[in-house]
Amino acid sequence: MTTTDLQVTGMSCASCAAKIERGLNDLDGVRATVNFAVERAHVEHGGQVSEHDLIHAVESTGYHASVIDHSGENHMNHDVPADQLRPRLIGSAVLALPVLALSMVMPWQFPGWQWVVLALTTPIVGWGGYPFHKAALNSARHGSSTMDTLVSIGTLAAFLWSVVAVVTGHGHVYFEVAAAVTVFLLGGRYAEAKAKRSAGAALQALLSLGAKDAIVVRDDAEVRIPVADLRVGDVIVVRPGERVATDGVVVDGVSALDTSAMTGESVPVDVGPGAEVLGGAVNTYGRILVRANKVGADTQLARMARMVSDAQSGKASIQRLADRVSAVFVPAVLIIAAVTLAAWLLSGHSAAAAFTAAVAVLIIACPCALGLATPTAILVGTGRGAQLGVLIKEPQ
Image 1 (cartoon, rainbow, N blue to C red):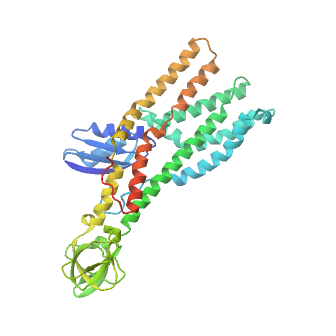
Image 2 (spheres, one colour):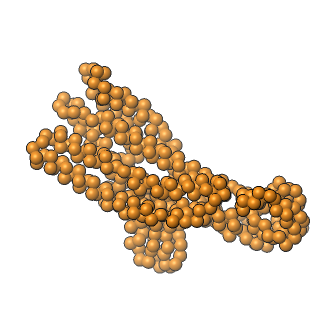
């Protein structure tokens, strides 16, 4: 079996991850798990399935994927939309305040206030809610539904019903529902994006312990080269204050190395000829020569970073349950909303009352947290652990 890790972009909820997982597992001999929080797919497959086949399977479900190169430092390069979400969140929140005030405080309502609220709510639903509508449309094009489908249908239904009520002068308006739900969900998405970015920064901090370049002895001359160009057998010069560039063995000189970031050892460790050293350790006082015996992805620092990344990509058993539930949850809610609408109409209630009940089902049943809480907890927990020198190997 071959293992391939894919970076997946375009997911917006746990049901997106479940859909991609089903698409990958439909391939012969493939076992895949997709983690929404870290936007990664971990795939085990036979030689008959190529990386191109895996990427095509993801893209056929409406998302984008690329193969993760473990030899580099890009373990946590999330396409986090926090920068795009922040202006939408702030702008929508500012516009939503007067919408809520005018809709909820009856003494403040003046003749024609509904038109003012309509004007304020339109950019909230159209611009602020655009990420939800775009994701819902993308899912619909591929014949599926996600949590964004509920959000989009619920907010658009409340908004469009209210527009008709204002134009015709009959019926209640529900602009505050469309505005408030959009703002709350934007707030949740923004907090999620910030959490993912901070956890990614923790792993990047672990990776930054490695040296960026090294001085090697080539043809009796000292040459500075990037760490990526190091080869097994190269002799590296490590001066006082510099980091050891890669794992190796001291061939000349004596010193003491600060390995606290790597091993937790608080006291510098004395080294001399024949002593094994780890990349990332800081040389305190002497000049030493180190012969590289592991480079790139084989070093202990790279393996530690990969261990943290794999733990963040893994799934706890409770998360697998949440993913299974979210996969059938959205279609079930859409059916329940349709049944609610029909039942209220058939029982003799007005169209306004029936529509209100159906929209309530759609909007209340938007539990993005259902598939988000556990992976986010794992993500932030493992990231914070890495900052404090604790490596968590598996989510279980």
